[in-house]
Image (cartoon, protein in one colour):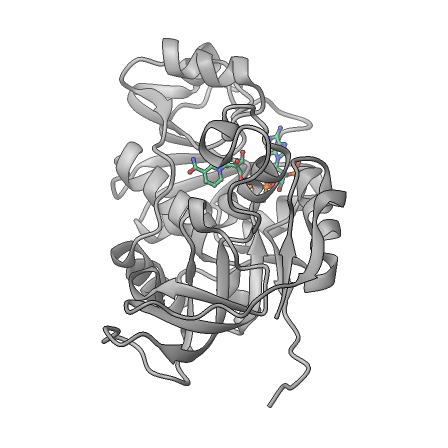
Length: 323
Ligand SMILES: NC(=O)c1ccc[n+]([C@@H]2O[C@H](COP(=O)([O-])OP(=O)(O)OC[C@H]3O[C@@H](n4cnc5c(N)ncnc54)[C@H](OP(=O)(O)O)[C@@H]3O)[C@@H](O)[C@H]2O)c1
């Protein structure tokens, strides 16, 4: 089968479309014929080994796992003998653990606990756009953010992969949502349900006198004192991303109890089912910016790295012997 492989760290040019052996499912795994995948910042962090700490997990000099791609949607082709939840022919979606990436490929084996039945109303591309970004939004808002109905919630980076899910998931909790994005994305952020939008090129949300019960930051470009100014007295700030190591360390060291990094998002069945229900009821609709074929994963990653995707960047996987 064809897969995207990288054997050294570096820019998108290190990614090669290569013939590799077809995977075979272990007892608790399903073999999935991938129809679509999606790109996440995790892919380019691992590809470049940036920040440098990524090397501690993925290999000091070269990648231990030469494959990328977390999110996928596709059809079950075979099941391991202990698999109970799926059968051949099921359409599924899900996310591979960060140390087992490999969705940028024609086939992948996944533990049955990491996938769920694809909502019928979603295309493969739409379903593949969801898992990691939606896990991040859900876990950041709920676990670190302690989101409650009726709160005033601000999403920084509301137009990105994570942000577009965060706006919709925060709305599903019955909150009043303000989305921060640039001018060209104001309409998109309004269209997915934000009650208010702030154009960061014209207004600084930390200096307009407004305060929020919960700030979910999918950019990570603000100082601790900025967050403090924009938080109500008991407010919580949950930070998912960071734009520099100094921002990261400042939040870790000076944030205190109320301002802090969310834990790294974890793929798990319970949350995948929660997200699936939000998709099935139409409370969450994936926003897709662009789709690239498997052979153009390097271009897709290059585009994502620019940091201005509107929603998700997806990969479509064509099969020559398509039925
Ligand atoms: N903690 C975790 O487990 C976890 C998991 C997944 C992702 N993350 C992190 O979360 C962050 C977001 O991920 P993502 O997938 O959403 O990335 P993304 O899709 O690349 O985000 C791009 C978005 O960021 C917006 N943006 C850029 N600069 C901005 C600014 N100054 N103010 C407001 N918005 C700005 C862009 O909007 P404009 O074009 O309008 O500027 C664009 O829509 C990344 O840092 C990623 O590494 C963390």
